[in-house]
Length: 373
Ligand SMILES: C[S@@+](CC[C@H](N)C(=O)[O-])C[C@H]1O[C@@H](n2cnc3c(N)ncnc32)[C@H](O)[C@@H]1O
Image (tube, rainbow, N blue to C red; front, side, top):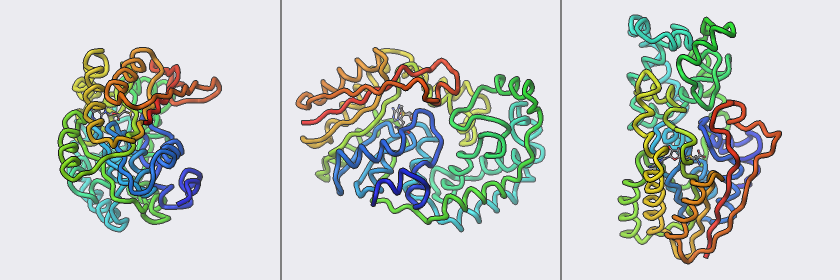
C-alpha cells in the first residue's frame, strides 16, 4: 500500500479511518506511517504501551505488521479499537436508530442535568446522548463500540460540525469557563440539531470507501504497568519478540489526558463534572517520583519482549525533567543500543493545538529519541 494514499487526502478506506478520533497530543498520521515504514518490515511485531488514539498501531496494521497497543484512557482506547476493526455500517445505522427511538424515556432526566449540558446541547440531542450513554455496551460489543466512538468524535466541535454548542474539538474546556464564554459571546442557546441526521452524514462519509484492511493488531484497555506483565508472559511462551517499540509517553506535568477529555469521559459513563475523573490519575503526572517510576516500569517491562536488534522510537517533551528521565530510563533498559536525539523545534508561525487553546501547556518543543543496535 502506498503510504501517500493514506496520509494525503481521503481517497481510500485506510485514509478515512486513519485520522479517526480527535485526541490531545496525538501523533500526526504521516509521522506514524513514516516511522513504521522506516524502522520495521512486514510481519514484524510493533509495541506501543502509551497508544493514545493508536496511530502507531493502525499504521503498523495497515502496513502489514502485527501491532499491539495499550491505553489507559477509555477515549483513546475506543478510537484505536474501533479504527482497527469497525463494525459493519448497516449494523451501526440500525443501532443508531434503535437508540434514537428510545430517547423520550429521558424527557425528565435532562431537566436534572447541570446548566452546562443544557446550554451545550439541545433537548433532542441531550436525550439522545443520555440514551446512548445508558444503553451502549461499548466495552464488549463491536457495533456499540463503533457507534459510541462516532458519537464521541462529534460530541463537541465548532458549531454545526458536531452535536454541541460552540466548542473546541480536541479538548473539552471547563464547565464554568464554557458557560461564561457562551453567555458573553452570544451562544446562550444550543443549536437545534437532529442527532440522527448529523450522525448518518458522518457515518456515510467515514464508510464511503469501505473498511480499512488491517493485519491482525489490537489495543488493550488498561494500565501498561499491569498489562505488560501479562503480555510479556504470553509473548515469551509463544516465542514472540517485538522489533519496534514506538511510543510517546505522557509528558511530566503538562497534559492531563483525563481532565482534557472530561466530557467524552462523561459520555462513557464517567462523572458529570470534570474534577472527579481527573483526580484519579493526576498523581502520576504531577509527582516526579511517580512519573519516573511509571516510565521506568513501562520501558523496563517492554524491554523484556523486544528482540535483540529492535529499534526504540520515542517522541517526548523537550523539557528537562521529562527528557532527562526518559533518556536515563531508556539507557538503563536498552544498554546495548546506541541513542540518537532529534530536536523538533516548533516553528513560530505554526498554529499548534496548544497555541490555539492558549493554555498553560505551551510546548517548548518535542524531541525524538531513536535507539538501535
Ligand atoms: C502522549 S500520549 C500518546 C499519544 C499517541 N501517540 C497518539 O498518537 O494518540 C500518552 C498516552 O499515554 C496514556 N497513558 C498514561 N499512562 C498510561 C498507563 N499507565 N498505561 C497505558 N497508557 C497510559 C495516556 O492516557 C495518553 O493517551
